[in-house]
Every structure is written in structure tokens, then in C-alpha cells.
Length: 275
Image 1 (cartoon, rainbow, N blue to C red):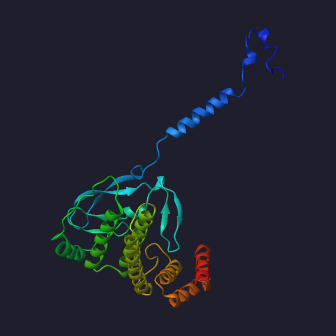
Image 2 (spheres, rainbow, N blue to C red):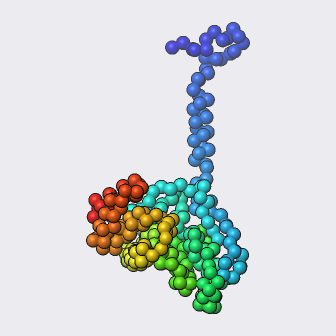
Image 3 (cartoon, helix red, strand yellow):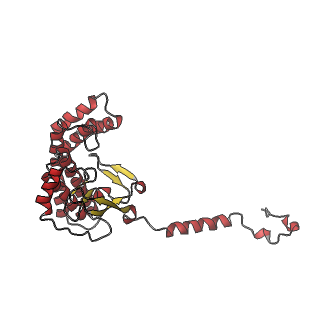
């Protein structure tokens, strides 16, 4: 094959027969690949920031780690609606804890405290609370579980709604599941994973009991869910704790509801197949 640049010698170009048309592109690809290899991997810490809060019980100003919502991507969800994100378990950062007085709550409830509730928290929690600073730049599963336990204790002390107690139990169950999944990826003791799974089931049972008690007494939306999403969640929780008959009853109510969203009906149909 002749040189495709032949004839350009008359225009002053020398050695054009040595020019490789795609050589520069290949170099560019190599450089781009090299840059891509050198690009640092996003860590969990990169997805966090310190958000400022003022405690509604003691007026103390503090910061708590939160996930940068614009930087995380949802990868899926478990059948009981537990969300899964790429690079971080956002559930670890949902409980806000005041380091001074010990008041804690899930983010959606943190600012809503009545005077009588604040008094109960001061008397029954703040009087004995001793804050332990998290050691790292992220919250570990143990850190997160402790913070959620404090949130649940505060909800009990302030006589919070059944739905808030149930939702906190559900989030704790999800955290225990996340910790168990993490342990299963590396070296772990089988007994430790089984203990986490047993505790998760106990919390799912509490969540089911709380949501069922709240269903006919509290207004919707409840914990950000409409009544049909809650019916589906009750059905799935009942299935997970071994109460099949109750699960079938709730899932049937979703399937016959004319105004239930298609997304929830599809989930309910999948659940019916499991049952």
C-alpha cells in the first residue's frame, strides 16, 4: 500500500511516509487511561459533610455528619424498602445525637420536641448521659447503632408516637443487616453474624407491632409513606418475622386497592408470589 501522504513532499513536508495516522490517538488513549487509573477512588468520607444543629432540648449548637445527597446514587432496595447506595450506607447517618444533653432522634423528627417532652428528656436522660466521641472520620456500624439506640430511648422517654418508635426500630434492623453483610464479606465468626440476624428479627418484630398499632390511629403520610406503602411494608415485615397469614391479608388489601400506585402494586404482587 502506498503512502497516503505521498505528494506532500513538493509542499515542503519531509519524511511524511513515516507518519502513522492513528499513532497520536493511541497515545491519547494511553494517556487518558493512565489518568483514569491515577484518579483517586471516592471514599465514604468524601460523601459526607458536617451539618450544624441546635439542640431543641438544651439549645447547644453542634455538628453531625450527614451524607451529601447530590453525590450518592441509589443502587437498589431490599424488599422491606431498605435503600442501598453506592459507596456509603446512608442509614448510618440518620440519627442525630446532641453531645451535651443526650437528646437523639431520627433526622425527620429531631426538631420537633414539646416542652413537656424536653423536661422528661432532661430529667431521665441528660442527668446520666456521658458522651463518647466517635473515633474516626466516618460513623462505623457500631457508632450508628449506638446513636439509633439513643434515638429509640429518647422516643420512649418523651412518649413519642408509635410510628416514630417503629421507624427507629426498622432503621436499627437495617443497620444490623448492613453490619452482618459487611462481616460476611471478610473474615468473621458465624456466631456473630447469626446474633446480628437474630437481633434484626427482634427489631423487625417491634417495627411491625409499632406500625400496626399506628396504622388506624395516626394520620398519613406516616414516616413519609402513604397508607398503601405502609400496608405493603406491614405485609413484608410480617413475612420476615414468620407471620404468613397476616402478610397475606395486608398484601391482598394492596392488590385490590384502586388508588394504590403501580410501583407498590408491583411490589405487592412479587410478595404474593413469595408467599
